[in-house]
Image (cartoon, rainbow, N blue to C red):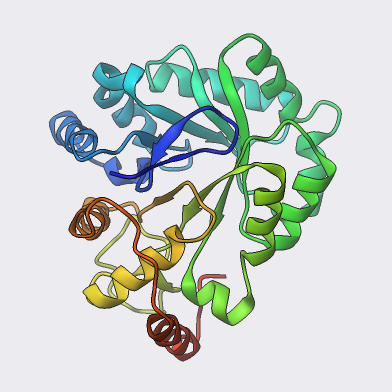
Length: 286
């Protein structure tokens, strides 16, 4: 599978990544099998969060035999130094590792929370100390709005990665992501894309056959899935994390493998097709 540099971290990572929510609720044998399958198919970037329920506790033992050959990312949604340090220590225990390759400040979209996380006594304070001690190799952040990304990238330093939605409908209907990706490119910040295979928000009363997904994924239209995934990974991103379901993870891998392990640029006609589809969607993800 194609590998790309993750900003200035020194890692070359697979263009399809493994999201920790994929193993949520799995037993030890199934999680070990899906992790081994991912690695055998070329995946070397794994991203998890305490917000994914029991995922980090399940993923840790499954990853243990492969730890030295992968890039492991985790997150904290805590905003104070004390809370962030405690959550980091728990994630290290859960993931059965002495260090994290990427540790991310999660869901930084509220301006007040941004100030709190980066201010005196904030989470960044503890993460910076953890980096000095070797428990964290690189620091990143996650958000979903361009305004938030701009504030963080222009006002605060020491950040190596950004996790951000790169989704055709979000882009075409709201221009979401264009400014953030451009700023990351300018600053050499590696981008991890999420929601490439999102279609729209779940509708009230809609049957949710993919319970780990917070949005309605593209699972029943292979052509659209191919276009949407390639739309995301032909932007300035290092990797894309499929929705948190093993069926959708395998769908993304199948698409890339059918393309020779690489992203495929879209034709002008395919761009037009995606744009039309985007404008048919009423409830985009954000």
